[in-house]
Length: 363
Image 1 (spheres, rainbow, N blue to C red):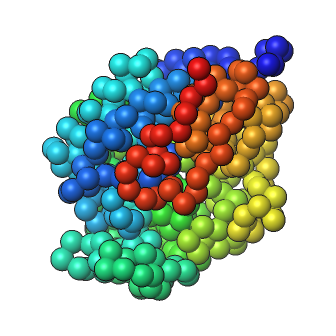
Image 2: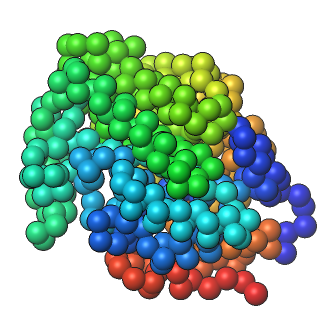
């Protein structure tokens, strides 16, 4: 057992939410929604099992039928979605937990098979991502060339996030996190390689950041101060994101976040080159120096490594992904120094309870 105090286990105030510890549950796509992308009772059980997290950040949740790009990802754009998610939040709150919804639009990281009426997915420019996409009809195919959004359509993306935020409030969440990371719609606008627009949403860093900042302003207006977070991955090149100008771009964005009464900024740390596909290596300490609010970091950290980030003052909390998949009682296991269940990666995106709700807790 560990006996020395750990910062990971200290309480933390995130805007209007008081977390009993700094062990956050990262947003984790699990592909287990029901018909019509409605959350299920099994999902409610899964999240409730992890209610001891300082804060649960839900799986990425599309704000529009055009925002899907993966199978069985739950939505937040119909009354059925709201009712389904209400079962989840009620279950988490019944166990004393706190949960925010991650709002999502995949942009070009999709395929016509996921889109209503089989239309092309949208993006900032008609530039396809590298890599392949799993399609509902079976197998994997190359990402298609997206349709570039018209200027007046970009405003519609902001409205979709505002409505999604409002629906999340109706579903009983404690706040929302805007997904601005991992190569999805907002990062597609932020990065030079995927955004070659010549209107007010392209070109300069100020223009490329405009969509994300407008969406955040709209969502904050919907929820009020201290209830909205944002996730960024400045060092990653997920889904064809290019490294050119990344540090300049994200430094500008992070500084601009100080103008908003956010709950937190959730920024992925720089991993070692051999650990991932990263092409940029800006340390989280750089962004810590720019952002005056609460900062959550993440990125394949062990509890010991996470504690180091907190004790050095480089972050205020750490989000854990795979560890929370396999260890629903993760804060308690950290308190006791383990042991930790190993995650079964073959079940990450499958159906049913195996590898989802059947991991044991410590007695």
